[in-house]
Amino acid sequence: MPAHDRAAAGIATGAPDAVPSRMDHDAVAEPRHNVITAAGGLVRAAARGLLRVALPPLCPSCRGPLADAGGLCARCWSQLAFITRPYCERLGTPLAHDAGPGILSGEAVANPPAYGRARAAVQYDDVAASLVHALKYGDRLDLAPMLARWMAVAGRDIVADADAIVPVPLHWRRLWMRRFNQSAALGAAIGREAGRPFVFDALRRVKPTPQQVGLSRDARAANVQGAFRLDAAAQARLRGRRVVLVDDVLTSGATVEACARALMRGGVAAVGVLVFARVVKAGSIPI
Ligand SMILES: [Zn+2]
Image 1 (cartoon, protein in one colour):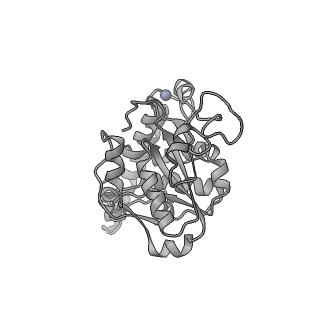
Image 2 (tube, protein in one colour):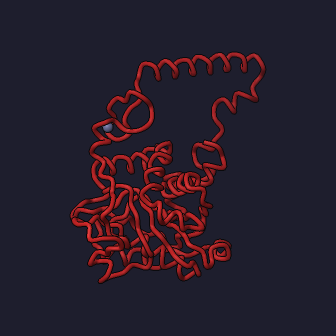
Image 3 (spheres, protein in one colour):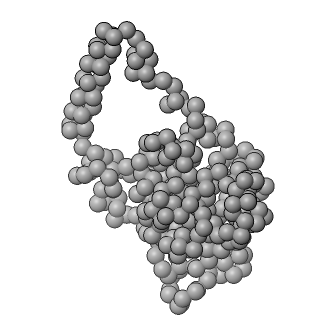
């Protein structure tokens, strides 16, 4: 991945992969050693090529063999539950019946969020979870463009109105540990896909928050309250603008709500939310 893409994906600099490689070290060795090292490199490259021939590409979800690299196997693809209308125009939650354009869910009317409209590509289920897990913990940044394409389609209406794409940030300690921010990787790819500016560092996570997993809805909201702030430089750039906030998974909505409030406090005119997967069925447990 080029350096500018890595920065756009929020990849921590100075992380272990920034340590000079063995080849970098060998480059300053004496010339004869260089020849031997270069030959060794060719052998290793040939071995990798043979491995690629011997081992077919694998489905990023079930690890089953794929005919071609990229995409999912037919079984995982058929299991993905893409979210299409009818859904609540505000929250993006699927509705059982199509009651006409502009329909809102009872929840959106009773408890309207700070953000305007939320959209998700798929329902959070086993296949979606495995893709998020691979992106987040498995260093499968190569999945980001595919997931981002699905997200750009699902959020076509809010992305079309957006002046900028902003990711949900990680606290710097977690960014350091994980080496990249999966939401930033998705946001950067959506920005490229839709031709919208991507503002990687607009939001800061000013308070390290425990993982939301296992917390109740109220506890999740309390956990992230006051955790985000709009960066001063970004504030000048985004004042009065429309922003699409990107995250990987939406569970209770507490994180995107806290981010939307921080953006609005900083003078952003409107916030839309675009996630890869959202929890729809009660009791679904995100990773
Ligand atoms: Zn599969």
